[in-house]
Image (tube, helix red, strand yellow):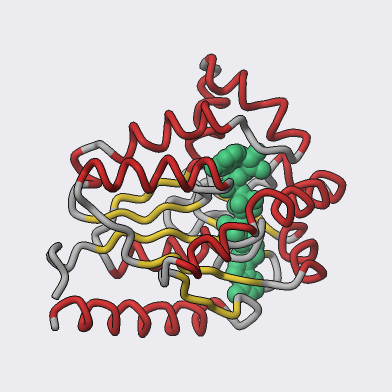
Length: 227
Ligand code: AP5
């Protein structure tokens, strides 16, 4: 029996453009989880012109990772907010082994544990196609011109604001992001596999099928938790 009630503390892991944000949007409709997306937080800081945003900008525009000490600080601070007390969904954090170690330490300090790490995997060749067709709303809702189009072209279904292309979605930056993923982030697959937390999903399936499979896995995990 688990020592912790059926709190869901989830991590979405996977290459850039694999569909982490897309699945996060759907999971947030299923479960009342605090959503912690470090990429969104950094883009928000840039938009607001804060020191953090200025620090992050050059790394993000190159397709590089923002330094661990910066990202660990903002992610753990967000994790300690009230709304994250009963469960959270981390998207884009951790992304390096030092970040994963810092998260483990924080969870141990709080007497909490990660429920599962959801790896959404997609081959590299599909990533560029996906990212080049991605469009996002001001509030961060994601679409794809071909695979997941909005009802009215160029407008968000939810708030009607114009859809835009992200600055780091240019092909040369995408290749740098992919390289960085394989170098710095993919070791986390083994890291969490060894802890028995990794759940693998084929992200090349249509979004609705990926979502169904994640939901089925989470339902099983919750049942196991209650045994
Ligand atoms: P971040 O914003 O986290 O970007 P990312 O991980 O590169 O992931 P993306 O947002 O590009 O893709 P996604 O997997 O969410 O895919 P999506 O659902 O949009 O990070 C940006 C930058 O911030 C980093 O490069 C780094 O500089 C910095 N940063 C952030 N966190 C950091 C950290 N922890 N440490 C250091 N630096 C950090 O889908 C992509 C497209 O495909 C969409 O158009 C979507 O509609 C479509 N799609 C989705 N699923 C499917 C499907 N199943 N079939 C067909 N199309 C699909």
